[in-house]
Structures are given as structure tokens and as C-alpha cells.
Image (tube, rainbow, N blue to C red):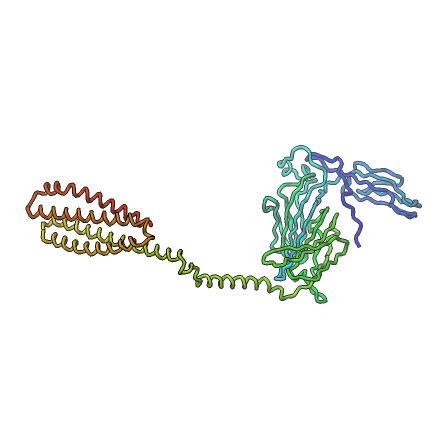
Length: 486
């Protein structure tokens, strides 16, 4: 049985006060208990939180003493007797009201019950007027903000773990947490002191051991957990409790010690297929007296616990099997298709061009050695060694030239080489011209040495040839770079 409790019965008067003023409240009721029957004797006692009273309705047999106002006793009252009374008194107790509280209780049969409370809270006491001074509040908090909400105390179940708390901006840094065998107490200081009319939204979350709240009875499992808000001295206008059961739960029912509105929903989370059944309970005007235990009964097969691990294992197995199949699967186009044949022909063209490039580089290397023999001649004067180098180079260049001509003939016969063939032919021609000019230069220098022509005269004779050689070498290098970038 619950003692009757009324919400929103006290009204602030005045409705707005400054930061340093005290909060005054008005209580209106009847000095006579409203009854459809005749009452032989009745009295009323109003206990106030403070000894200061601004005013109260004075009736016969009424008196005020030690923060209590007593009316009566009254005798032989007729049915429906009503005598209005008004009490105007001081109370700096803050009016913390959760306009909406959404509690989500998620059950995991792997050993945890996760609770998440989302608060939309407002201070419904006398609204503050004027500017708020944090300096005055910190200097004299009990005088310059006596009715403000300075902290909130949440009595969590014992063995609560992984406690977190945050508002819309982020973590609320100022807090204290301690616990014993009976409870875990969380003290939170909001980001700012809450005066009348101010509101805030924040979240409290924590985990609970599954064995402390989940039991079995008559072939069913049932969750036994408290209903109301764990925060002390708070009124909840609308309380919504969502109990998220494991996927595969069946035959769900609810047992509560008081009337509640409830319905079913479905929630999808990680690796869910058909979704998790959710029992939603709703109640309005919830006070701390409603923080009683309720039960949610359901059937759940232990085999269903293996569903998600098997899905993960199957997913990994399928992934690795797909990788193995992909690495061994021939994804190429049919070998008889025109596109596949064209691809093969282009690969042959590229291979041929690379061979021509290598042969041209070998020719350039032979020409560099031939140039080196001329430098050795100027240093040693050994004409016979220079002629031998010329003979060896001439033989090597002829062999390389024969190979180049064979590869160029292949390119000329391939339709895939049409756009690159002119550059390759130009490269071969320029390299041949470079080779001819270098041979003429070599012959000229050797003849001059045999006839003992002066060094200055030799340079004059080969000057024009040297310029043409340098120009041709640059053109050959440019063409090689162009072909290399294919």
C-alpha cells in the first residue's frame, strides 16, 4: 500500500525572486477532510520545513507552534465539509522536476544488465530575476542561491559498475562515487547551479551484475529491478521504462505493484536478425515512493545465446572462403574473345618495345666505349689500340642493329603498334645517324694522329661533327624517355 502523495501542490509566491532572496511557497487545502460521510472528530496538522511563516489562515481552534500549524479538533462535521486554508511559508528546498525520464534496461545473458537514464530536468521553484553572479554564489552559496540545485544524489544498486554521466556537451567532471554492501551512491554537481526556471538534460549509465537481478521460476526467467528514479527528492512528470530483452525471448509478461501503461516494441542492435523485444512501461507523476521492484517474465532458450557467436564464426569462415575462391578464380575474359586477343597483342607490342629499348641502350653503351678509345688515344697515342676498339665496336653494333631491325619488322606487322611505331622508327633512325657521325669522327681523329696533325687542327676538323653528335644524342635520349613512359 502506498501513502497518498500529491505533486505540484506547492506554488512559489512570489513567482520570481532575485539571487539573494529567499523562496516562499503557498499551500492551499481544506481544514476539514473532504468526506461523503459525517465526521465525529477530526484534526489537521501541517508540518513545515522551516519555522518562518509569512501568513496562514486562522480558524477556530488553530494554532502555530514549533513549525507546525494545527487545526482542530473539530467535531460533528457534516458530509462534504470544506473550509479553505492557505499557508504562505519559507522553504529553500529546490523543486527538481524531471519533465521526462527515459530509463532503458538492457539484459545481456553474458552477465550484465545495462541501465541508461536520460533526464530532462527543470527547477520549478521561484524563477530567478536579474543577472546571475557566480562570484556571489561561490562566496556565499547558502545566502546568494539558497534555493538553487547544487548537486544531485543518485542511490544506485550495490555492485554497480562502469558508471558514467554526461550532459549534452560532454562529461560532467564534478562528481563523487562510493559504495558499500547496501548501495552505491553517486553525487553529481551540474555544470552550473540550477535556479528556478532553469533546465538541463543529462544521462546516467551503469552496469549491474546479471545474477543480482535475473532469476528463474517455473521454467521462466524474470527480471526483478526497481522502477522509479534513483535520484533522491525528484518528481518525474513522465517516466518511461524500457526493458530490452535478448533476441529470441518469448511469452513476455509484466508484474508491477501499481498500475502502469505498457506496450511492446522491437529494437535492433548489433548482429540482430529479427530484433530484440522491448517492454515499455509508462507512468505519470512518479514520486520516490514508486521506486519499488517490478518483474518482467519471459522464456529464453540457452541455445539462442550461441546465435551471435555462430553468426560471427560463420561470417569469418565465409569471408576466408570467398578470399580463397577469389585468389584461385580465373576472372579473365574468354581467351577466344576479340578483346582478350587484342590485350595479348598489346602485351606483345610492349614486350617488343622494351627489347628495342634495351638494344638501343646497349648501342649507346658501345658508342660511349668508342668515345672513350679516342680519349685514350689523346692520352697514350696508341693508334693500333684505338683501331682495335673501332673494329670491336663496329662488329657489336652490326649485331645489335640486326636484332633491332627484326623487332621493328614485328612492330610493323602488328596492328596494335600503329600509334607508337613512328616514334620507334624515328628512334632507330636517329640512333643510326648518331652511330654514323661517331664513326666519321673516329676515322677523322685516327687519321690526324697517323699524319701527326696538331691538336688544335684536330679539334677544328671535328668541331662540326661534335655538334651534330651532341644534338643527335639528345634526340635519342628524348625518344627513349618517351617510349619508357608507355
